[in-house]
Image 1 (cartoon, helix red, strand yellow):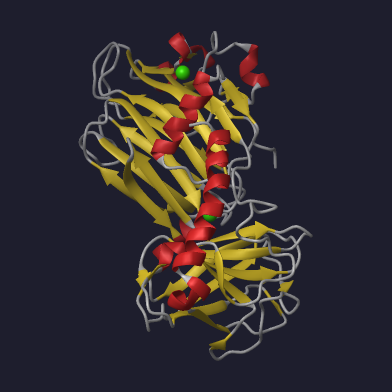
Image 2 (cartoon, protein in one colour; image 1 turned 90 degrees about the vertical axis):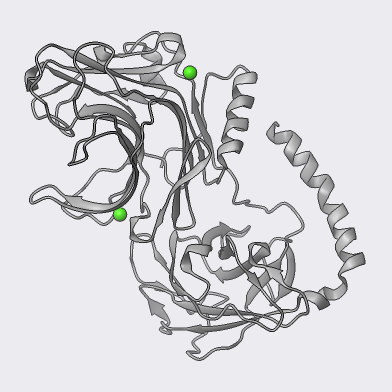
Length: 450
Ligand SMILES: [Ca+2]
Ligand SMILES: [Ca+2]
């Protein structure tokens, strides 16, 4: 379905929904919600705002929490990051995003991915916090929703919407009418799509379209190995990485394609990737790593603004694993010497040879990794990326097994897709890519540089 068609359906559906609501559920009597607020950081200026909230259902019907949005209004357009410190309902079900309003202000919109609130019940404590992305102190006393009270009481300067209807509180003046398309929707902020229809790694369109074919030496992989543009090709519109080794470092060729611009942060990442268990030629058994990932530079050891989200397939094991294994790994940071990794991972010991649809959603403090539509990993917390990243594909060798004869491993990628600031399900990604292809689009990049 094209995006325009979807918008038409949405605009038709809203009036019908309003009619239904006004006939069936008058005056919100059945869904009376009430919000209490306190802060645990009451200072007028602070390094971190700490609004604690609890939501009450004073009505007579159960409210699915995924229909609830809580808005906390801020003054000014600074870039903030949201975090959930602790919640009775579980921080993993609590989302937060900042929505820009007309006039230059913004609100934090808190939502829920699951759960429900029965009549007479409360969510209990939700200990939330947010801070400036540069960790500078800021003035919170001018924020509309802020109050200095450190004990819970009803607070109408934080609003609650149920199914898009204002159900508690008084919005800040420039709050968009929730029944109308927002002035600044939290929707897509640009798309990248590449079907990899290039003539070869020396095709000048690669650089024009923001790709770097790696030739510079260095890690990861075997020290002394060559990163070779000549081992990257595009037969039939498939990015093809042919990494090989003759068993010696100087005879080892690794491959990498990276976006040139580091501009990808929150949103949805997707690629259709073909992993392989066996070499296309030569003896098998090398500890090869086949990847789709995002990454930032490490400015210094244990740089907290480092970020990396990996799909890594090891067809022959490695890192102490005896056989094929797929990892999804999310990095807070690391240092090289002595080696210290601050990361979390999910693994599955199975063969993933063949084509797979890989998706990573980055939003609201969570990173969800999907393989062929199945949720493979769900990470968050300190591992959430703080800054924009590059998108990369590479194939490299952890170490060498001492076989003789040259062996070549092949990883292929059919397409890469990213939608900035938009969470798309794997099925929605398929639909979006299908629409791009049916409109004859082989490449598109509307993701702004940052
Ligand atoms: Ca980090
Ligand atoms: Ca393709």
